[in-house]
Image (cartoon, rainbow, N blue to C red):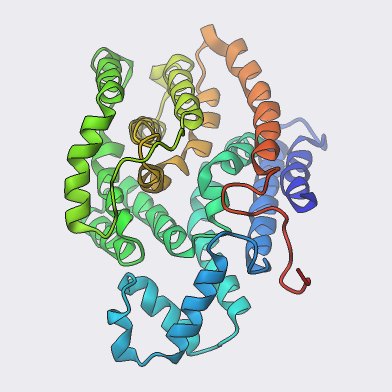
Length: 357
């Protein structure tokens, strides 16, 4: 648990230490805090023991199998080809599983960090929100999907710059790492849709209908998912309502607080991602697959909320500022409570690879 205390509170301290009150000094502290967080997070993922992360030992096993395979057998193994060849390429240089974990961690962080560095306006809030998203724990466990999520950040930058052909190729590449990456196909049109408060008269009733009919809708979509993927979509009662409620609160905050005239196109695009994340989360109580498909969008929420606060309207200034401080304290506590029992993906207790367990 001590490593996670360091991971959160040292960057928060760096951002809030008073070395000066001018904006340039604040931006420097903000950037330093975010960099410190990602640097230490990457180191923790690189140096973790195989017992840290529910699927880490399985991925090490896969890596060993790919090392013994001939190139011609790789595509027939049963995993997505991009991930399979990623493993095989690494085996050309090393057979050490710890180096494999380290290179995978570096690859994921290298794809995610540049966008976070460019967009982060409040490192402390972004860091805390990042840690409560299920993608945080997945970084310690699901190498295959997190590589796909990382490629999703490249797809995001291509979306932002309106490079459609490159975006399509990037989505196809992500799908070779994890089939669920087909969800990235919605990113381009969703980002460029100008959904403002004027849309709420249509958006809110639609969200209510989707929630009330979530079982029927998921059953209908499940027939197509099962046909084109290996996933079993039989309904499971997961009880995953906490994050659904949280995303709903985030959505209300994101539309209530800002002055719409101040919002740039990127903030509107990120807010659209939140709406999709909310819709996808409505199916999470029925099947864990919904959350897996949601990873590609929930990881952008930590970048959105600080921007919403930045563009707050005069009417909601006090609520926005107070909300920022409340979220910082509440989600810090929420994070440590959520991992106190080991976390859903067994990231506690944390052990370095050289420790005996």
